Image (cartoon, rainbow, N blue to C red):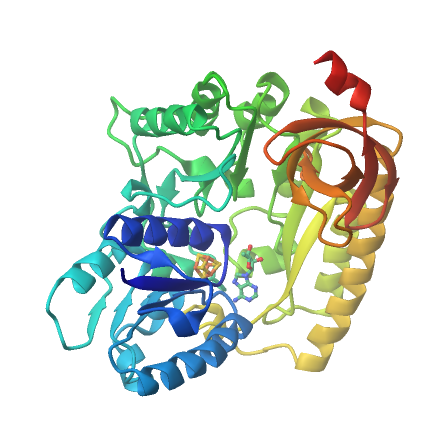
Length: 440
Ligand code: 5AD
Ligand code: SF4
């Protein structure tokens, strides 16, 4: 039996695509092995969002090159956004690569492996949903569901529109059917994925077109799905119907990831985000009004070209005003082919670093303060496995997407009632209420 090994970089969409790649390989009769050195097919699912993502992957490729020189029969494949962004240059830069394919061309990997091709091949059209392929899930009770691919936004810093193409939505019937099957299969939590989930459906033919909030409603009605999450929405498309759905639908979690990017309206304009600080804050107010306890997390970029001290202070103000439950913070990194990479006034590295430090301090402090509201409460936790820091404890996540380490007896995939006894900036600590288990 032939074997494979996949290394995944980047976002949840890539995690999802890798599960599909694995499913496809298994249906061809390949078996997964834990060590790259033991695999006949060595795959990398790459990311190109920032320069650091590029360089991490290039380090790993070195090992693949060595393995290939020891055993030329091995197949080296490079998929994902980095491959898409350099296209056939992959083969010039790394002549030992056999097959390269963009995110819209995963099925071509199967074609390549089943053909007698001996020459290297690249596949970079935007053509197919990986969501149609068989899937090998990392955890049986959690699943990603790709509701759309691609992105029609023109954010001036972002490489994704060029790596994942125009937005295409999957049909709602197909999605509901797929999720119903997943639920029968034991899946309790689904995360809907799209580059811009809440513009879902706008490209569908009229007879199929439904709003994102209606899709959420249909999924909520499926028996067995206890939790629905989605990522990422765009603030410009965050309408009241979606926010209200968080209050109405029992399975839709109390967590919204609302990427800010910058708190300065001037910079937001240069980023082509199509909202300003006021509109963003209106969305936050609407969330707080409908779901007062909702966790709000965000993405922030510091050091976008032309960002002044004053602009950065505005980002800090928004952070303090919103009081985020968590934030991913990034130093701006120029990406090939994007508008912002051509802008003059790139911010010096030292300035970016200083701003980043201040931002991270504020984010961590607020995160810790916000987490205190959970202490003393009994919360529903979906158990994921043993704690990473203490094997005698369990680890799981609340509906607010907080990781909890707790003592208890629950099994992975079960919902536990956990009394929260402490909170740091990153995790909660607690104890399972065993009485509630006895009664259940
Ligand atoms: N530089 C830094 N951060 C970026 N992001 C996207 N492109 C860049 C870039 N060129 C960040 C954004 C986005 C997240 C996934 O990555 O904050 O929301
Ligand atoms: Fe995901 Fe963007 Fe990285 Fe592609 S470039 S893997 S879409 S984060």
